[in-house]
Image (tube, rainbow, N blue to C red; front, side, top):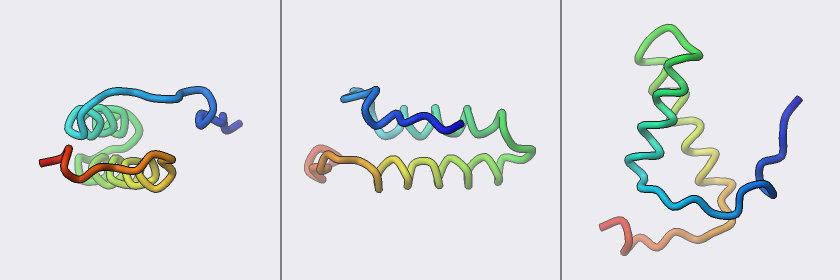
Length: 62
């Protein structure tokens, strides 16, 4: 059963690097190869960004 986490978490402060690293570590547990884990982490990251309700200030990324 899928949980709706959109209402459970309002804000998490982290860097993009920390988020990508964590997603990759979790993905490694679910697949067999590094290539698959990177692909899965990439897809998860894309979904997080796509479903984000907050706008991203590109100036903060530089």
